[in-house]
Amino acid sequence: MNLTNQQQIAEIYQQPFFQLISKSRHIHQQNFADDMELCQLISVKTGGCPEDCGYCSQSIKNSSEIKVNPLLPTDEIEAIVKEAKANGVKRLCMGAAYRSPNSSALKKICEYIKIVKQHDLESCVTLGNINPQQAQELKQAGLDYYNHNIDTSPEYYPKIVTTRKFEDRIDTIKNVGEAGIQVCTGGILGMGETLEDRISFIHALTQLPFVPGSITVNMLVKIPGTKLNDVPDLDKLELVRVIATIRILFPQSRIRLTAGRINLSELEQSICFMSGANSIFYGEKLLTTDNNDKNSDHQLLAKLGITSNA
Ligand code: SAM
Ligand code: DTB
Ligand code: SF4
Image (tube, rainbow, N blue to C red):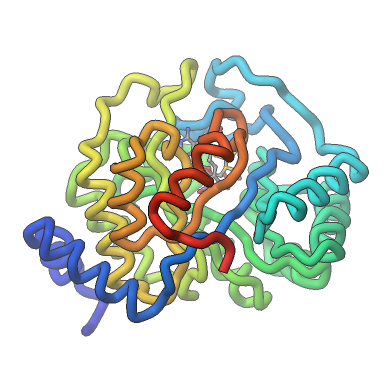
């Protein structure tokens, strides 16, 4: 199938619900066992970000009350990594509230990556825009994945962020892929976007210069003080449709059910897993907001007969 066609994606997305999730389930089973990838997210530099992303508590343009933190000391990273390893985590994702990291920050983050690799975990960072040289430095430090979300459709993007362009995001993704680092990207649902935006967002994923190994599907976490705090809730069946459509179009990528999972019931999460999501953030905190607790995640996976960390 020629995946450049938005109409074809719309047809996949809008087919009757049970037909859609039957197809995505079938493709999922052809490509994956029923296993769950456990990733842990830590915020290594929190707040004070000059970008104006309408959803984000860490933007200086928003008025959310968060605990601002400079880059963490390296020994703190070592302790977090050891605990993550002991908890059976597969990948450590380190997030930093930058528009773009400067050279001394990048140097320190390269040290973090080396620690993660010494403990035999996969490494991922999300640091904002990076150029080809910075991508090379990260690769040399041993970085496995770089997370850089396209967030929404190219058409809706300027309504959410004005301090950078959608195309800037694509440039960084290109730099990451060209350095031989795996791409992790995705978006946020429930930001007031239309159905056409969701289809166009998925289409944009198919047009990236590199096929993402990890695709991250966030449900907006509404944070007081952000511009998007009052948008209406998304119908959760739309979340399932997005996951199922992505599974059909990206049979071999891990799909992470990311932020907003805490607002989903066990049944809602289960339908997302059935439809193709096979990665989660594991641990009680995301960047500035809460995540599901570890025990309830273990219980749910056990009830579903899903093993963790394939
Ligand atoms: N500053 C870097 C950047 O924006 O690329 C890295 C950190 S940023 C917090 C990583 C991603 O988290 C964003 O691109 C966005 O997709 C997601 N995110 C941030 N706040 C969110 C929220 N309130 N709800 C859902 N996802 C969110
Ligand atoms: C992604 O797609 N979601 C994560 C990660 N990549 C960096 C971030 C979620 C943030 C949720 C809001 C918060 O905790 O501040
Ligand atoms: Fe900054 Fe990233 Fe938050 Fe945007 S999403 S304000 S770039 S930390």
